[in-house]
Length: 113
Image 1 (cartoon, rainbow, N blue to C red):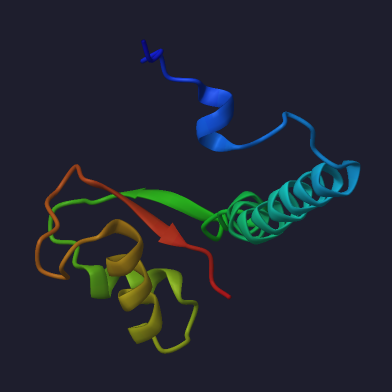
Image 2: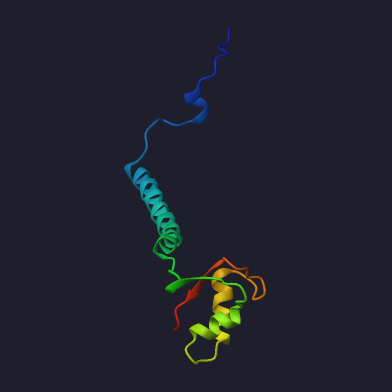
């Protein structure tokens, strides 16, 4: 007697037509959102790509001999200047403590600057 099928066109009450203005606004909003995401997202990416890793200052290799200390090495290479800065630079460049060097170990001595 009654047709029990669901008629989708009647449930949602749309005639299937959209106005051109509505479509244009949706496209404009989508493009604007993409631009905003692109601008916001590109700043960190550009910053990460533009950062360059600074090369360590030029250095020369020195092989530790028996009886050497970082202080004696720095004193010999500092050419009459105070060796304390060079002692700190040698320790920092090689990642060592001043008392932990052994004969035969290669140390990188930073160039005096």
